[in-house]
Length: 248
Image (tube, rainbow, N blue to C red; front, side, top):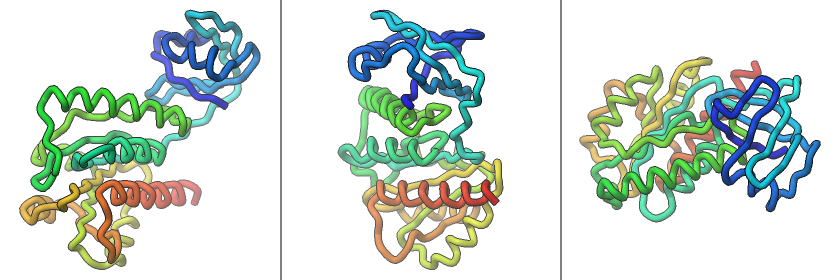
């Protein structure tokens, strides 16, 4: 079943109206017809199962069905603080993190980041990253579209991360997976979790010392992972831990 996102003002009591680029996709690419079922979300947690009632060149009218659409979100909010990587790695991180259930993604400038963006490029990148998040949310049938924040400085990112009840900092020089397992046991339903991922050049010692007292600095194993691999590894670990506890 295909998934689409709409604004709240497009949702009525009996019908939902789909407009914009999704109309062309439904009509010309998917070639969907009246009577076919679709899943529609408002991007902030509201989900509906619908049947297509009418397809025109301007809009698609979908009738809301009485059956429950089901929520696909994790019971914990995960805030991913990703050091801005070079090339297309940020796009890959966003796509996969959204599929794995991330709540928000915050690009961060750190000491050893290879890429340095000016203000104009930062905003242009953020717009593209947000579009990638929306596309990934559709594919994964998410109930909401994760927000991609403007690029933050490390200091501001640390302060924002501290709003979470559990703050994780994977660090290549940290040793001992037993400690990592003990940290994951601290996850309880409903708590907010922040994850701080370092850049290609790794965290500086000063950056680690800034968070060691208040955050959980942990290992991801004996091997050195690329920044994008580290992000997806942590998101996978968290998703598994959270969903297993949800099923207990």
